[in-house]
Image (cartoon, rainbow, N blue to C red; front, side):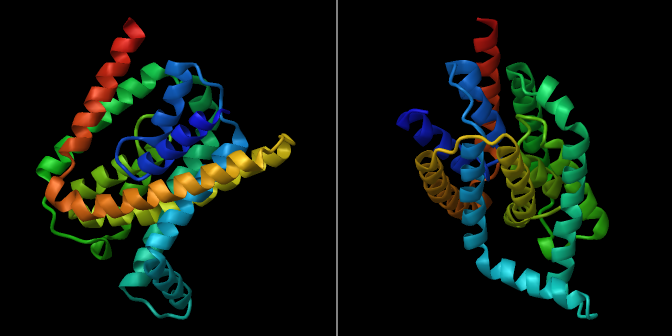
Amino acid sequence: MSTFEIIILSLIQGFTEFLPISSSAHLILPSKVLGWNDQGLAFDVSVHIGTLLAVMIYFRREVVTLLLAWFGSFKGQHNGESRLAWWILIGTIPAGLFGLLAKDLIETYLRSAWVIAGTTISFGLLLWWADARAKQVITEYKLTLSNAIFIGMAQAIALIPGTSRSGITMTAGLMLGMTRESAARYSFLLSIPVIIMSGGYTALGLFDDNAVVNWGEMGYGLILSFISAYICITFFLNVISKMGMLPFVIYRLLLGVGLVTFLMW
C-alpha cells in the first residue's frame, strides 16, 4: 500500500469504528469506488489493535472495575458492576455465533456496494426513529438480561456491512429507553470483546496463510487508528447529549444516496 492509502484507511478505521456510520462500509468502499487493492490481513489486525487500545485506555477505570466485579460475582459478590460485566459478555455471544455460522454467506453475498448502500440508508433511518422516540430514562446499570440479549442480537446484525455495530447497538439501547450517553458508553464497552474476537480471528487467518507482514504498515496503522479512535470516543461522548443522532443520520443518508448514484452512473 502507498503511504496515502495507509493514512486514509487507518483514519477511516479509527474515526468510524465508534461512530454510528459503519467502519466496515467505509473500509470496503475505497476498493469498490477507487479500485484500491485489499489492505490485507496484517493491516486489518493492526488497526483492530489500535481501536481496541483506544477504547480500553479511555475506559480503563471502568474496565478494571467491571473485571474485578465479574470475578467477585463468582464469590457471590453481586452489584451493578458485576451485572453490567455479565450483560456485556452475554451480549457478545450472538455476534460470535452469527459470525461463525454466517461468515461465508456474508463474505460471498453481502459485501457488495449495493448491500452497503441499502443498509446505510435503512439503518440510518432506524437510528433516526429510535433517537426521536427515545425516552432516555435509564442508564447501562439499569439494563436487564433480556435487554442485554436484545442489544446483543442487534450487534449480531452489524456483521452485515453498512449496518454499523455502534449504530445498531445505540439504536437498540435508545429503543429500550436508555439515555444517549448511556447507550453510547454501553456500545463502546460492548465493542471490547467483539474487537478482541474479530482481531483474534483475523490474526489466526494471518498465521494460517503464512502471509508476509509489512511491520512498517502495521505500525503506522496501529498508531493512526489508535489516535483517531481515541479522539472520536472523546468527541462523541462530549457532544452526543446536545447534538443527538441526527447529524449522523443525515451523513448516512447522503452516503447511501451518493453510493446508489455512483453505482447507477
